[in-house]
Image (cartoon, rainbow over all chains, first blue to last red; front, side, top):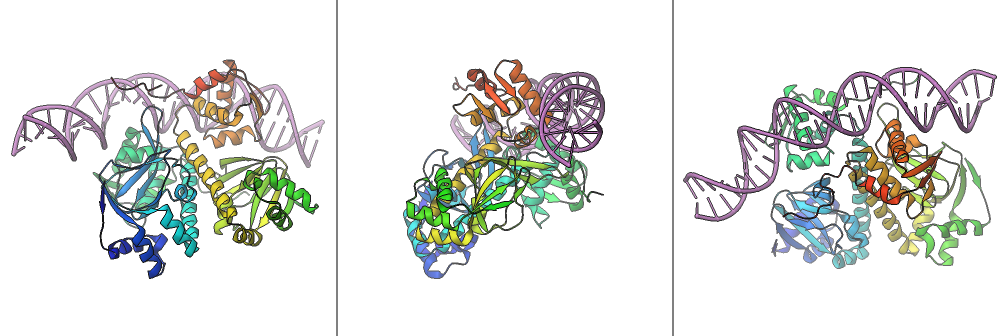
Length: 239
Length: 239
DNA sequence: CGCAACGTTGAGTGTAATCAAGGAATGTGG
DNA sequence: CCACATTCCTTGATTACACTCAACGTTGCG
């Protein structure tokens, strides 16, 4: 870990990139900036530990991290893949409750840390802030329920296709900012099963994989794979 | 649906049974009570629909319900089993965001509905309230992450054991307040797999099942079943 | 009194986990 | 700069588990 002390303008610029703070006025932003710390973390460094108490709001401004629960056999189950710019574990910091999971850097990460005291002070002056944090929490929740439903899908193929569709968005090329084994864990698969699913999709000419870069060749094909294993197929209605 | 208009005292008494409102002062409670509606729902009636916007906070004061996402083949995937007394979907109502899932009564339900306007008004006067709601949201989140991790467990046996341990708590007899097929769905299993898992545990003398009533005979045995299929078993350390 | 939904059991199949091995990539120390 | 170690990724063979399909007993409801 390495803490930087750049001019305030730098921090404010980082803050503006985060959706959460995008629309705030200059005064509030500089207030946030002056209370914040900028830190650099190496790969595999831990941002926080499950069970410990948060004393600052973490904002990932650059890099990627994974949020995971300790698995039974010493392994870990990834429950969230975070990519900058985003907030991490905003709910615990608001509540003062212990972290429900641990976070580890997948790449070198630039993190903005906002002490609870500063956050509360600013929240008191600007009621917009807690509402936005709550909104972020809501988003996280939606994502978790989606993951949960997704895990009930039968085929590995379908789950991988679903993930890639959400991951690629409108682009037809993107980089997995996590080890494949971690993506596999996130999807509730073994690394082998994930690798095989990718191989199949590649063999079908649907995509190309080069290291961590995924290139989409046939969006319709991926959409078809996504529907794989759906019992009823497209449900038209009951006669 | 049937709306009741009991004396205020009745509603306040219901409110006090909910953890969320347990510690509030009389004035606040009666304020809440006067703004609330008491409703009775039949079995299989829907409390709210995925996608629609919440205009009131729902408090389940009696009965049980399931929260579910529409499955692909017309089926449904249960993501939460709610038992009175508890709050339902507190985050959407706070944010004004659409419900991420639907809720259906498993049994006849008594529900207290608190309009958003009333809730906000009270929240403004008593800052304790939004904090408590946030706490409830936090709890829900913790549960979701737990479920997610649980779904990665290999064996149906282990998942069922895990669920029962949490479900029974300190008691050694409790009633599933949901159809077995819904519990199965919640656990990410088919009804058949769930039934078989229960059969196995019963055959081993670990528990008895009578309709929806589960009686625990061998807590240590259930704990052993819970550890079933753990790759490393109890990890002592590396030589 | 039938109808429908649920729950249980049986038999067969398929998919993903497991075990095993080799190759590629990354990072460390001489 | 190169040997070495470690981790990750991939592929193959095998197995085990849960899903599917099917039949039957039961319960509750119209």
